[in-house]
Image (cartoon, rainbow, N blue to C red; front, side, top):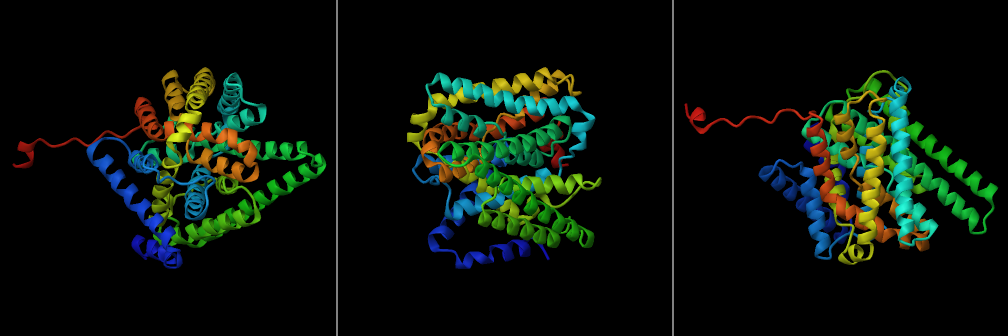
Length: 415
């Protein structure tokens, strides 16, 4: 079965999609693909910058996605980000943290210090504590989607690439758990029973872990029978991850935490690395393309006006805190100062992970999310184009990009 056949089967379900949502999907694919190829052909920037540019242009003309996410936009975002988080989780070897306590300390320090810095700065803007805490948690993770996609597209390899993968996976884990904990606290503070809220939290986390373990086990069994690098196996893996994400959405557990935990369980239950086609083949690649276009369009000019200044302060505090923690601990973790600076820059983006967390918060706590939404969406809008460029610059600074192919001189090609 070819990649084209795999993609055709997955997208065959679009025949029953409502016409409006079908036009949305087709439009996103066309706009993102054209912008990505144009950027790649005319500049040395990664295609991700073109995908997000298409979304930004759509938002500027009033055709961005509505928040909270729903319909086709939510489905595409859940599937694409779930695939990316599962793929990145399956490449994170947690035994590395045991062998390198400095790296474990770096992970905790950059996540906690960035959240604290954001909270302090936003309090200076007069925001209430609930809104401040929500923004601090949403700003904690650097998106695995941006750093992972840029690194894979450019063929980056090295310490900074590996550490960026590890840190983005871990701070996504911290943020998802922290948001769940804070929502439990808010539920109890609003008149609910704290023991009942804690029991609900425990059930939610255990259910998430259970679904993740089932997904990891299913992938492990498939791997014993099939070559995961084959496109046919990639389609089966795509189906397993998609089914687990649909189940997670149906029973109300985190669609961020579940695939990430599944990937981590799969990688750390075995010594062997897991290798499969990037983004599980053609279908996954199309979903990832649409993810970046959707995230790039999740803002309006009114949002930039409402949250712009607070967003700039948030981003400055967040970058300074992450850079301080990473650079200060770089020697202890076995990295050079140059690698520490490069890793700090690679952790700059704020994208799909924060958007999905914000969407979930808007559904669960609409009154609270109303104050956080303009700031987070404006922050994403500011970094959506700058993020992939920052990651590319960081990987180049670290010397982890392969040399660009040399163009032959015209006289040489005519000989």
